[in-house]
Structures are given as structure tokens and as C-alpha cells.
Image 1 (spheres, rainbow, N blue to C red):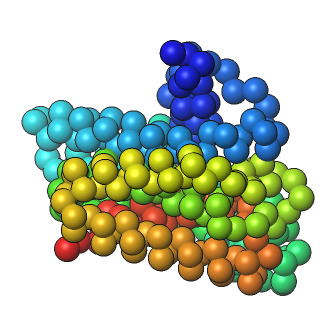
Image 2: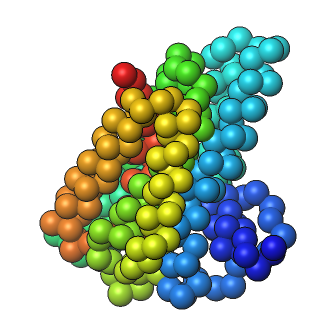
Length: 242
């Protein structure tokens, strides 16, 4: 059983700070690519945790406080991994200077004003959505955010010859992607009916746009772009209502 679910445990270990009964071994491509189909399952785990946390808190606290605490736990559970990618990506694009200038700014650990603004706006958007929308979106948004990273890995080349982006790309496990995507669609329909497929389609369209944009800007994607994509698609999944 442990061997069967080892990729899932490795994905949990990589994407969250949740303790799991397994150690991830290295960051080489062969050690990371095989966990990508399990990304949406990690999103489902996070979503269920946030759902039940919010459900518990709303019995004792006002809705805005529930939303703040749920969002805090959400971001802490991921170790701020995706927010860091969001900040670095926005700083890189804002810096300009061609491919090398953008990549150099992404590697710079200092936060620029655009990065800070992006983090604040994303957190505000999530807070507003959690405060006002159905709690089912607390489950769906993390699932779609991590599914988006899988789609991005399948459709984009790496921008660098090293780093986390290169470790995930190229991702060519079509069987794993099909099975994982089928699971995502099943979860979406179960939570919100067939109207949820519109949200899934919107997320796919956003991922395509992100992929094309960074292909034009830096010739591919980096690890930071994965984080940016996760945050952007989570916000879209939370605020898109039909």
C-alpha cells in the first residue's frame, strides 16, 4: 500500500508542509515528474481540510474571521510555496530586459513593489471569495490550482536548463494526465454539477494563456511560473460563479 501511494505521499511532501510517512529523495527530473499526476489529489486533500476547518470555525466565529483564519491555514499549509512563485514571477515580468533580465529578476530573492501588490491583491481576492461564496469552492479551487500546474507542465517547455521548472518538464505521462483529469472533472461535477465544467474550461484557457505568454517572454516556464499559475487559477476558480 505504501509503495502504491508513494508518489502521492511524495507530492504531499513537495507541495505542502503536511507531515507524511515518506521521504522525498532529491530534486532530479526522474524524482519529480512521476508525482505530477498526483498534484490534483494533493489539492483535494488541502481543499477538504479547508472545508472542514471553515465548517468548524463558522460555528463559533463571524464569517470574516473564519475566512481570514481559513486563508491563513491554507497558505501556511503550502509553506508559502506558490505565493513565492507569484511574487518572483511578477517581479521578473515587471523588471523586463528580455529573457535574461526577467530570469535574473526571478532569481533575486528581494521583493519589489509589484510583487508585494500581487500578493496583497491575491490574498484579498481569496478572502473576499471565501467570505461570500459557497464552501464547495474551498475544495474545488485547490484541486484546479494543482491540476493547472500539471497541464502547464504538459504543454510548456522549460525556460532554463536547471531548476524546479526543468525538473517538472517535459511531462509526458499522458495516461497519468488523463486519469488525473478525469478525477478532477468527477470532483468538479460532484461538488457543483455540470456547471462546474465551465470553471474547469476557464482554468484551462487561463493556463493556455500563461503558457503562451511565458513562451513568448522567456522561451518557456520556470518553477516560479508554476507557483504563479497555481495562485492565479485558484483565484479564478474562487471568483468565477455561474
